[in-house]
Length: 156
Length: 156
DNA sequence: AATAAATAGGTGTATATACATTCAATATTA
DNA sequence: TAATATTGAATGTATATACACCTATTTATT
Image 1 (tube, each protein chain N blue to C red):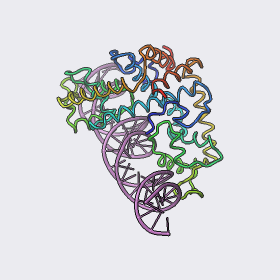
Image 2 (image 1 turned 90 degrees about the vertical axis):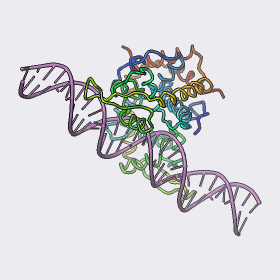
Image 3 (image 1 turned 180 degrees about the vertical axis):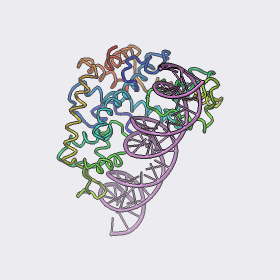
Image 4 (image 1 turned 180 degrees about the horizontal axis):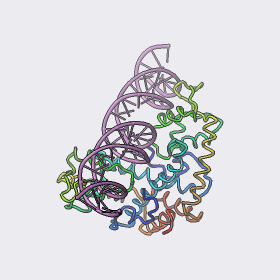
């Protein structure tokens, strides 16, 4: 894919945007796709997808505690991800373990396996490296982006 | 879904980010998901998805000319979208027409139908309205976002 | 002109998303 | 306590994404 294209006009072969605001929404959507694509290509050799990586990272945040599916779900970036099925695939690869909750029989609790921890450490290193070399962003710019994006999503 | 949550920390229930840059990448991914979600919910009553809407919009850009699949593909925001199959569904709904190209027998050419034009006009109105009411962005901020996002995707 | 290479579109498979539904377990309340 | 409502996880279906592969056609090379 054409992941080296920088200007939005080139990326989507269009130069007529209704407004700067309209262009910004397309730019956000395109940049998110670009980020997911470069991250996924980094993860590919380890046989995990971007979403599976996301779940592993969330589990890492509580490790060695177990987490129930609901608590993983509400930490996902894409809220409507279907976490039970993502977990299915991680269980098959033996990167996580599923067990019944002793407190609430409706819940299942998930935890990282040793392979899960190992693969997460390696891939996180790779992703961090990628971010440093490919995503050009000064800390000051990042602060600005965070502010602008949180503003556009509404006021509290 | 929780589309009214503004702060990233609340949205993904996490407050430890490695850096502002790391937080910014998550913020971009989350904001893109948020944008797609609110747009899709607007399109739902018309029975079309965000991606189908995207294809219709691209076709509108050249209307009444026909476009081949490749030219639609390279204008898509998400480059790996599978355009032939998105077109399949638009053909079933009679929003676009597919025909053989007279110039190159490998190509198929696509064009909007009258229903396609009509639905596109209505939905575009709805989306524009949504953008005005829900996406809080001054033109000046949009210019900044565009610059920051294009910078982070690299230099030419 | 004959052969090789490239291109356009489509298809197959695995995974993910979006959304509705189901089922068991828990919580609420009357 | 019994009846009702809510919750957590899983499942079913349609659509989309990611990527490999196939076939017909066109272009390039010899």
